[in-house]
Length: 452
Image (cartoon, rainbow, N blue to C red; front, side):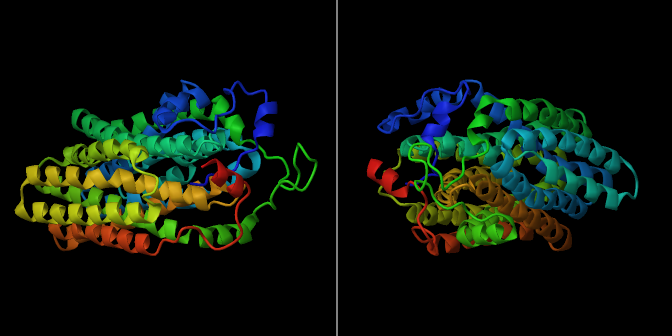
C-alpha cells in the first residue's frame, strides 16, 4: 500500500514535541499501539471529541427544522444546505491547509462555525424565516472544521514510513467517525427528548468552540505545516524531490480526475446515509416517537465501528477493489432488508435491519479513504481528503432532501428505496476501480514498495 510521502529529514529538524520517527519494520499487531506513540496520548480523545459536533449537526438540523415547521421535507432541505455548504467549504479548508498549514485555517473556521450554529438556532425559531434558516445552515456547513479529513492527513504524514501503521490509522479514523455518528445522533436524541432540538444544536456549538480549538492547537498540526520546495532535497540540495502538484482551478480539476472513482463512491455513501436518516425520521414520526430518530440511526454505527477496526487484520493480498466490491454488496443486502422491515411496519425489525447494514459501512469507509490517500498527489493530501469527505456530504444532502421528498410525497417505505440505489451505485464504482490512477508515480512510491 502506498501513502502520502513525508520528508523525514524535515520532521527531524522541527521543534515539535512529536515522538521519534516511525520504524519501517513495525509489526502489524503493533499498529494501533503505535498511534499514541506517534501523535501523543491526548490526540486521540481530542480529535474524537472535535468531530463529534458535526455528527450532531447533521441530524440535529433535520430535527430542529422539522420540529419547528412540521415538514420533514424542509428539514431535509436544511440538512442538505448544511451538507452543500460543507461541500464548498471543506475543499477550501483543505487547499488552504496544504498551503499554510492546518492550525491557522482551523483557528478561523472554529469561531465562524460556532457563530453560524447560533444563527441557525435563532433563524429556526423565527416564523417564516425559511431563507434565513437555509443560509445559516449553509454557512454552518461551510465553516465546520474538517476534523476527520485533516486528522487523516496528520496520520499520513506521521506514519509515512509504516504502511501497516497507516492502515491501522485509517481503520481507527473510520471507527472514530462511526462511533461519533453513533454518539452524535444518540446525544441529539437524548437531548431532544429530554429538552428540545434547540438544546442539542447548542451543545454542538459548544463542542465546536472547545474541542475544535483544542484540535487546532495540538502539536500534530505542525507535522502538516508549510512544506519545503518539492524540487529541493535537504540532503542533496536539489533534484531529489518531485514536481509540486498544480494548485488553483487547474490543480483542483486534476485532483478531481485523479480521485473520480473515489468521489463517486463516497457520494454514494453519503446518499445512503442521508436517505437513511430522512427515512428513519419519517418512520419514527409515523410511529409517534419523532425524537428517537437519532437513536435508531445510531444503531448503524455500532456494528460499523467494530468491523472498521477489524479491517487492519485482513490479509494484505486481499486488494482494495475486492474489498470494496464485497462490502458494498453487503450494503445492498442490508438496505434491501431495511426496505422489507419498513414495509412490515415493525420498528423492531427496522432496528435489526439498520444494525445489519451497519456491519458493512465501516469496512467500505476504510477502503475508500485508504484508496483516496494512495491516489492523492504529493502535496495535495489535505485537499484530496477534504474533497472526498465533501463528496460524502453532497451525497448526504441529496439523500436527505430526496428521502424527505419521497417520504412526504409517496410513502415512508418509498424513502427506504433510496439507500438501496446508493448501495448499488457503490458496487458499480468498486467494479470500475483500477489499481492506481493514470499519471506519474508519486514521490517515494518505489522506496515504500521496497519497504513493503
